[in-house]
Length: 317
Image (cartoon, rainbow, N blue to C red):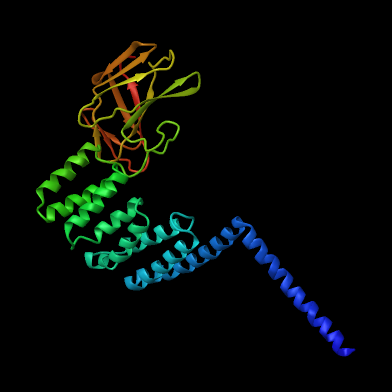
């Protein structure tokens, strides 16, 4: 009788253990979103530990140990799912932190094979090609040029790719490549590493654009011109949507990268097919929020991460 009671007790304990386990497995394998969330949670927890270890390794300039940690993080990222996923962003940030800790080409050489693998797995990520190209400075320049060309095809507005290509061509005395990258750099309006952060005026990348900000009955009206050309255009036209008084001070938003001199010789305003007003350079003056205007009226743009704002005063009025 005693043995039967013990046996029933053991059976109950087994059922109490097995049933919850089976339910957990059923939920995990039945609900794909839950399974993904659990795996992501495990992966992100491991990434936090990796970041702490990586910080110590890079601070001690122990790049082999840092790369070992990055390789392990790559395996976890790929294990979650091939291609882009939620863990990839953390991996890219850790690669950036580690690579920025290098000082010489000898330091960057440690990263060559790892970044080659990353470029193969993620060929459309601009930063990976830029970092990989920088590890090839002591190698055959043709492979470096290939990475630079591919990077430019991904993002032609960033100056970093051109600078690496120009530097390599200069060191290797490759005049043809030097002319190619200098010409491409000039054609792409001297680049711009970040889009203008004013989505309702400059959607998308937004570079090489200017817009006027008008005030009509306490309502802000933005009128854009996408034809900024540093080599040619100095006269810009704006199509006003309705009859608005522009004799008062207005603002001019400029979505161009820093280090650029912008000359404005004439601004013309049109409404309903007719030219309503026109201002030459000597008829307007500017003050800027975050740039400078020289004594000839040229605007020196100094902002890197936000658009420039110029307050324009009409000297006619």
